[in-house]
Amino acid sequence: MEEWRYKFINTKTASRFLTDIEGNVRSETGIYQRANSLLETIAGQTAQLFYVKRLKAGKEPKEEIWELILADTPESPLPPILKLKNKTLSLRFIVKDRGEYTLSITSIRLLPVLEYQPNFTFPCYIKLVNSQYSRGIPFASWQKITTNLPLPAIPTEEQLQAWEAFLEIEERIAISKQFFVPFVRHNYGTASRNISFEIVADQASVESSQENRITVQEFWQRAVNSVSNRIYLVTENEAEELEELNLEAKNKRNQIYTEGRELGIIESINQQQCLIRIHLESEILYLLDNNEYQLPNTGYLSFQAFGDRVQINRKREAINKVKKGEAENPDLGKFLFNVAEAKTPAKIINLNSEDLLLRTANPSQISAVETVLSAPEFALIQRPPGTGKTTVMAEICYQVALRGGRSLVASQANLAVDNALSRLIYNPVIRAFRKGNQNSVNQEDAGFLEANVVNTWLTNTANSCEQKLLQKQRKVNISQKISRNETLFTRYVQFEAEFTDKTQQLQLRKDSLEQHHRGLQ
Image 1 (cartoon, rainbow, N blue to C red):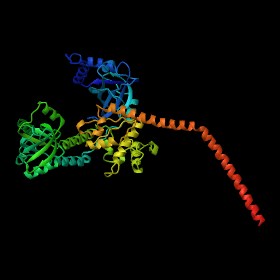
Image 2 (image 1 turned 90 degrees about the horizontal axis):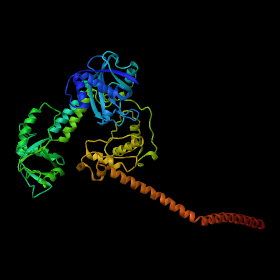
Image 3 (image 1 turned 60 degrees about the vertical axis):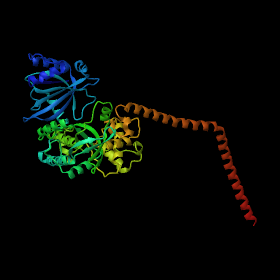
Image 4 (image 1 turned 45 degrees about the vertical axis):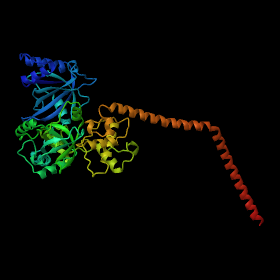
């Protein structure tokens, strides 16, 4: 057990902590005393298991920001006050000069209860003690934690320059796909699911702001390229509001305004008749059928290249996290720019053919799986299309599951995830779960969605057990047949032995007669 000594950095932090645990704080009187008393109840009476993480360097020299997350294990359960809320506690504080000074708590937050120890954290039994003037962390503890946990590596602006330039290009490409075009009529009523909208091509623009007009030729080119993508309907009133919002958002790169209501998927384009045909999505179709929504006779169709823009923003957020040292792996900022900085495997895992889920895997695929299983931090597999990367992904998921781990298969395309899932032939070790919109998941993979996954697993398990029982039953039947014919089989073996013996005797008699015959000659 170790005592770590702390103080609240300001009343705002203490007040926020009291509000989260007890509700509204009606009086500012004795804020520090009440907050310290509450924290003592949670983690100051006995030592509690915490997961310690070094987050980043502080603003001052010899200063770091650390985080403590309260664990919930059979040996160290959550205190009752947190158990009732089904929450755990996260404390962030400033560590100065190798823990020489009292820890300054900068924030205390409630988090969902952790099911397991987070990566890149160090477990430590700690008793928190309020103290204004004393050492914050025992030196031995500070040394042990800093030896085992690296500070996040922060890449330089020069290293990130190429990434940011690439995002600028992607952003321009995404904008070059967008269009915002008025429609003057549609055929809903005569058609129910696939609706045609008559549009005014010479009034098309990039977005709701009419200052970015595009030519008729450019519009049709964008429209043709948008087939099979989502499109939105914007009413005339909404268009006026969006124009103001877009003017305000010119300098807010990460802001995405979802223009209007999602209609569905662009099915086809007819330039001669100025028609865009749209396959309505299920939600709006339900609202229309139940008279809960009515398509306006006029308005705007907006294609926002929404998927591209979301991906760009996610990439930008990821870059910002690496910049701030907030990546999950603290070494990410090093080995992304210099692969030699990545840790080498301590042990190479070799797989035998009988260990594989897919016995058809070739040596190159098996080698890729072994590389992933052996890698301590990350592995990159880059191969041309059609070389079996999806098969490798399925095998990785199986091998990780065999070792008690979990895998996340993520992609910018639904089809890629579904393809990987389809390779995971049923095995009780694997409990696959598909996260996503039911309308965007392949029908054969719908059984792995949240609403169906338990029944799918139970059904597959029952089928697997039945097949194994049938195999055993066939073996039993064969054994019974052999047992019934045991007497005949024994007689046959005896007859074969006698036949062999008599054959040998006859052969010897024949040889003797032939020899005698040659002597007479």
